[in-house]
Amino acid sequence: MKSYNYGKQYLDKTDCNAVLKTLKSPFLTCGPKVQEFERAICRYTGAKYCVAVNSATSGLHIAMLAAGIGPGDEVITSPITFLASANCARYVGADVKFADILPHTANIDPKEIKKRLTSKTKAIVPVHFAGQSCDMEAICDLVKNRRKKVYIIEDAAHAIGSEYKGSKVGSCKYSDMTVFSFHPVKTITCGEGGAVTTNSKELYQKLLAYRSHGSHHTEDWKYDMVELGFNYRMTDIQAALGISQLKKLDKFKKRRREIVAYYNKYLGLKHLEEETFSNACFHLYPVLVRARKEIYHAARKIGLNLQVHYIPVHLQPYYRKLGYKKGDYPYAEDYYAHCISLPLYYGLTQADLKEIVKRIKTLV
Ligand SMILES: *Cc1c(COP(=O)(O)O)cnc(C)c1O
Image 1 (cartoon, helix red, strand yellow):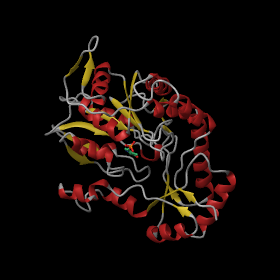
Image 2: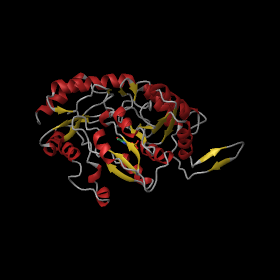
Image 3: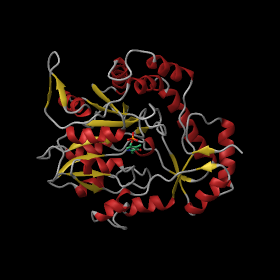
Image 4: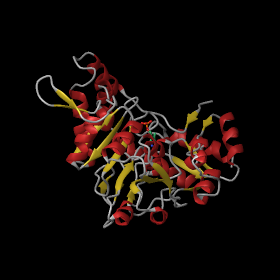
């Protein structure tokens, strides 16, 4: 019996040839492919600047540093996300405040953000869950005209290719920085990898420095290390794959949207809704079911390796130790109790979709 995971990368001959060509070139890292990939991301998203990194987690970390976030500051994010969206604030010693989700999209609710804004708030990290953009204009409006600057750093790990009100996610029209992931479960992959986009030259220069030991090249052999940075660099091998994958993104998006439309039509299960402002490149297809645990196990037996996105971050033992508890974010907890993600990836054929729907129907 053919088995299906919730997600799967798609690589073709062109991708493999691009990697091979770079392997045979003089530069395996710090070469021209990284800049070429960064320029391609700028062209695609419309952002002025891009810094490629070795993961979205690294990207979120240096975005926090570039924004000058540190101890005593508060960062607001969603509880329905991957750990890294919250952990990045902890890396720099800031406190994490969660804001509950909107049940129909599982995206952070701007009204809940508003309730949690304080004089210590230094950043908001909206997560574009399952690929659908948060309501960025509403989030932007919350922080306009505040005495202290509040940075907006989009966690767009799910959302490359998505649009909000006609602009590409990553354009930073409504934010200071946007972070992408190119892990193989995401829409396009570099093996591991990430990128940060911004329209601010100042943030761009800081991101560049933090990516590489906090140092700036000055002249000849000289460089100044002014901040404590890291080695978060992407290799040219990864960038070559990224360039090749990015060329396929619009094709991936079209197919992903077709699959979502098919499931919406033929499964008859409760699913997330797409807002009128959104044109998402869907990364996940979660449905909400009553007996989630039973379905998860029964699905494995019939070749469906489904996944749960996500255990609310505030319920992780680490965050419980910081004072969070069950009941703090009722919509996130209710969503978690019922969600399960079905297979959604470019390689699925119509025959696969028919088969998956048939199998799911035996479970629910
Ligand atoms: C995958 C993911 C990350 C982390 O991405 P890496 O590239 O694996 O570090 C961050 N945030 C969200 C929402 C993710 O899904």
